[in-house]
Amino acid sequence: MLTIGVIRGFSELHENQENFIMEIQQILSYLSTLNPMCMNECKDCISFSQINMLPDKAESFPEDTLFVGCVSRVKARMLYTSFRIFFLIKDTEVNNPQFIRNNTVYLFDTSTTEADLLITCRKAMHQYNSYLNCSNDLIELILSDANLEKIATAISSMLKNPVIVVNLNFKVLSSPSYSIDSSFWLRTIYQGYCSFEFISEFSKTKAYQSTTMCFEPSVLKMSNGTNICVSKTYYDGEHRGYMIMVEQDTPLSWIDPDLIALACKAISHVVRLEGEREKTIHGYYGEHIVIECLNGEFKNRQGFMERVRNTDFEVPSCYRAIVVDVSLYKKFDPQKEMLKEQFQRMFNECWTVWCMGQVVCLVNIQNLQEPFYDIIDNNEEFFNSRELRLGISDHFSDLFCLHDYYEQGIQSLFLANVLNHKCTVCFYDNYKFYDLVCQAHQKKLRLYYSDTFIEIMNYDRKHNSSYLDTIYVYLMCLRNLNATAEKLFVHKNTVSYRISKIKEILAINFEDAASNANFLLSYWIKQILDAQITEEIPE
Image 1 (cartoon, rainbow, N blue to C red):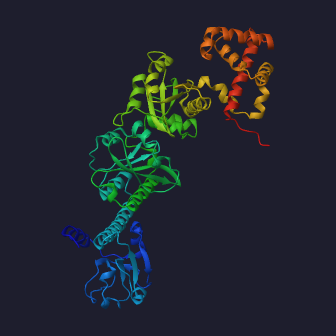
Image 2: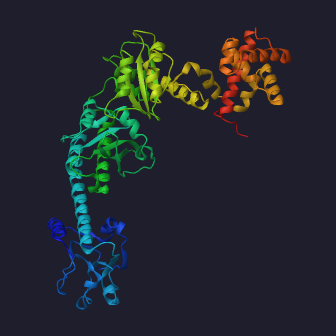
């Protein structure tokens, strides 16, 4: 039985039906969750322009109409109707083969009612009509050379939700001239970039991690309370950014995913045409130059010098690059920019950006009020408590080579991880030798073990002892017995006994600086080989 509310619902949808043609297969794609079963598809009736309830009279079967009802309502006088389309709920068996043979007939199980099926079909038709209308509008905008902001505004109006376009570094490329209620997104647009806290949370989602090339939208509920729909933008076959739609005036579940994908394709097309990926709504400066350097976008020094003219980077200075691993970032407030603000408190002059999956902070260390190492030590607890790890490059003065020093930060984090070093701050200076060793082949590396190292290693294997580790810690502690005992978690007398035993068995002279250096180099090579991160030589 149809209630007044249901009747009003599909009556309103009926009033909104447009005079356009829809194919059977097009509406079936919207009804896949209802598991329609094809009884027959007549080649002479595969399209329609309106959807109506099954009539009570046999003569009320206008052409170009999809009829919805129950099998039990197919009266005997209707059985001879031909070349019509029927979506029927199978509340009883269809006993007339001629009716099926002469018409297009799809059956649905009784888990849905004829009223719900009618509304669902009309909604699908309405969505498809909206898709066509939006397609036409977007094509007209693109042909009229509308810029990215106009396209974003048009899409926001079509979808009745604000749409924001960002690049892979989460810089805002464009925002709509559309009222936005969320203070978080208003601040994001004003700043011209997404906060690192938002990026960190977003980077843990499947929408970010997926490598599949498609415009299919993903709906996400963020911890700041907003629901967003994210689609990837592409050009030249490569993923270049995101279209973010914020749920505001229309629930995201009401919007056709195909329409969102179409909007994203339009955005991608305009971004490619205009080269908007190179810009932000705030223009080129500071952090944008840093991103360009990190991405290696300057083909020669002349282009770089022209780019930094009349900026803070024109005057030579001294820098360090800090790469922050945010994969485990915790204890942050998504409404605040805690990480960026922390770096600004630590350093007089710094530029913090998101680039290639990490937060990167370029620090001008020339005029610091206290030594760089002291600043890092004094603030280490902030990063440690949030499970943030820092990879810090050597100092440098040539910003044109920033990418090389960024790689130092990346490599120090990588080596600290594979060597199982439990540290929050990883200076590249402590991993240079490891990095150098990683460039060689495993089989060749073993040739560089010192004779003394090989002798001790063989003795350990034969007698199941651990003199290698004892000597290494002893030398790293500058041959201090107390410090060595503390590192090894043994008594000082135990260390003294081991050292005496080593001298007795292997005749090692710990007063020989060159021999000690060779031992340490051999030990570091072994650490790299044990971590299995060097390239094997092909057989």
